[in-house]
Structure formats: structure tokens, C-alpha cells
Image (tube, rainbow, N blue to C red; front, side):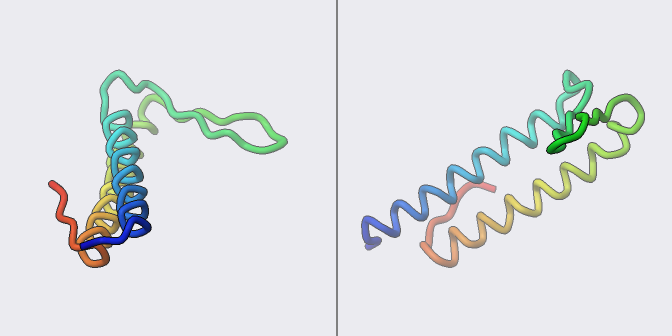
Length: 84
């Protein structure tokens, strides 16, 4: 049985996973036509068109890798299995 603190920590991991899944959906959506990079003290930069197409799969790979790492942490630390 998990302690209340462990439940909070496990829940925080689940929330991070859910945020990554939303980000993954947004990046992979054909309705996403540009990505904005906000830079401190400088002009924002935008990625669109062919460059967005090239970067999309790399973004998806990075998000999926982070998501899988969090799922593994959830399973190993808290013995909680989530649908991957």
C-alpha cells in the first residue's frame, strides 16, 4: 500500500504524462501549422512549413522518450502500470 505522499508523487508523474500526451497530440496534428519559440529579451522565432514537417517526427520521438521514461518510473517506484 502506498503512503499519501507516494500517492501525490505518483499522481504528479501521471499529470506529467498527460501533459506530454497533449503536447504529442498538438505536435502531430495537421492543424498545427507553426511552433513558436519564446526567447527572453529577444524576438520570438517561429517554425513552420517544410521545417516544421522535418522537425515534427523528432519532436514526437523526444516527447515519446520522455513519456516512456515517466511510465517506467511510475511502474518501478510505485508499482503502478499505466497504458502506454
